Length: 266
Length: 260
Image (cartoon, rainbow over all chains, first blue to last red; front, side, top):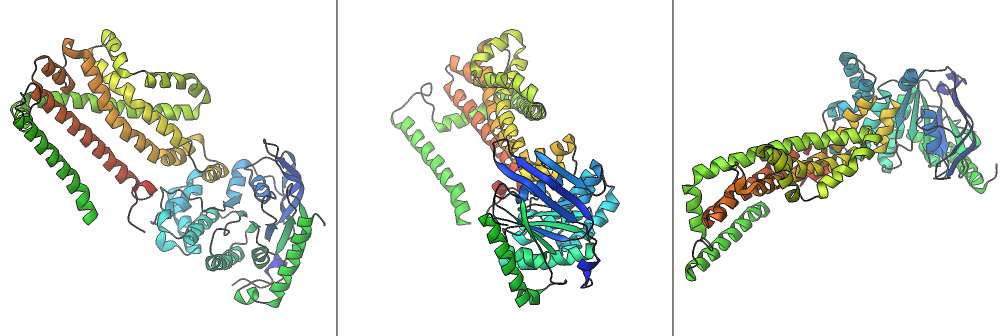
């Protein structure tokens, strides 16, 4: 288990920053306006906000899947296209697996598209599957798995390139509570083991407080970050933390911040 | 299990009943065979003329299979081309539609003017069969999961990667559905062209046998040839259904049943 002072060891260098980002869609919908948001090296930061506030759009802009209509995306080191690809992992709200391919081939996809040689790829796929506890399901097809297992495959696929930045778009929203709690703990363990940086979009205050080292609260559409909260509780966090008074207090603070953001205040 | 037995047994019972009534009607009213031959006579004719009919069946079947294969290649190929280039799609799609909506029976005589008969028949089979493949493949190529498409973009997939590893696998169930329709239509096209060629033609396909037998008032042989055509159509349908099942059984909803 990683050291409990892990957050303190992480640097506060910005890995990527959105500066004054706005996004207006072709149909006139203004999703984001004046969004300032910084992702720091090694942190677990959550973007929390009401549905439709542009959280997902912000994440897609960071991933380069969508272009901002105004503002800029600044990377600490200017990665070229090829480099950025290997630096970003993306987990969607749906598992988004290829139904015609088995678990192993699904996880191997990013390496295959990058043209990684077979042997090296195979051992990395093996390692990724082990990380999510699915090594015995390598030959299963997605439809043969439960919702939680599919999401694990999705996470294994995102981690197979060992990305510096993992972007997660409400990945556990569709799962039942028991599965969600288990995946929360697994995700924290992987984050600490891999030292990757995670941006986690959620509409659940409770989930964000449990997971994050920092929480950015967004306003309703057009979205921007109105408040930031530090997730002060030490890692590792587990079942005890989920039932602690400290957790309850942090949830209350975050809920209040979200309520103020919804009301339009600061 | 009982369900499966019924699904086979009931159509067989209906067939037997239908044939029995048919036979009874012919015998009771002494209907002459040049008006309506009895099932038993049709069967005897089938056996007696087997050599001739078998040769004709081979001719029609060859045309149908060739037409089907060309339709599959043409339909899938054209759909991929349309998918890769808007300009090509806009330029050619209307003509694909025109080819489809013009009844093939009306095109066939014209084709017979310009082409050798076997070629004309093949072209007819192709014209009728390729459009469902084209339409279904186009639909399939456009039915890609948007998140998966994003994922491919994120990892810098090339156009070829996207086509080969994402679009074509996504489209496979649609392509197979198109092929199932095309199999039956290819037979229809071949038969329509053979009939259009008629007695003037040098061909010897099953449809040609039907027209020829009609002129000679050999009605039992007409029925025998018709039976062979039906059986051919049924075999083609189930062969393609089997291919569909084998290709999709591991992953696609349409091929899954009972495992819940």
